Structure formats: C-alpha cells, structure tokens
Image: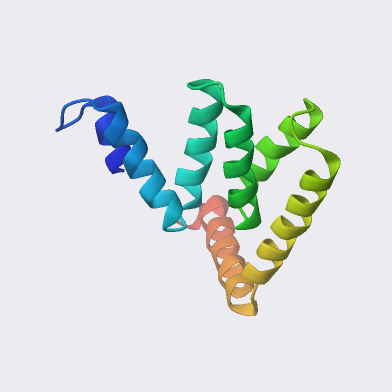
Length: 123
C-alpha cells in the first residue's frame, strides 16, 4: 500500500524511488502481490524482462496464480526456457496443494451454500 501512495502521490510527494523501495521490502517479506507488481513494473516500465521473470518465478513458487499465468505467457513468447517454466510449474502446484486443507474446503463449501441460499431469494 505504501508503494501505491508514493506512486500516486496520495498524502505524500510522488517518489518513484520510494515506490520501488516499498515494493521490494514487501516482496522480500513474502507479499506475492508486491512480487507480481515488481515483475510487471520491471517489464513494462524498465524493459527488463529477465528481472521480471525472476520475480514471476518467485511468486509462482509461492502459489500466485497470476504470476504463473504471466510466466506461461513469457514462456509462450520465448522469454522463459522450458526447464525454468517446468520447474516453476511444479513448484507452483506444490505450493497450491500445500495450501489445501479440509478446513479450507469446509469453509469454501459453507460460503457456497450461503451464496446459493441468498441467490435463491432467501436473503
């Protein structure tokens, strides 16, 4: 959030250096959204696809679906070799599998039942 404030100049003076610093700090702390944003910014704002790919691989390895989709696009564009893509794909799947649990599935089922109940006109 701090990076967005510095990017947009909301409540603070616009400062690209501080924007990037806050994104990097959040990414180092494990925030996959910050990692994905760094990848996007590296590619679109700085033209550094190699650094973008590194960020995408790290975020994909943490289970970020958006990063995996972006990495797939980079692979299709020839920006990521087969070995790196396959390794990231396996790591992504392992991270997603690790996040699954009976409790999460039970919660998802409960949320679906509430949504169905409301959609049926009961709410």
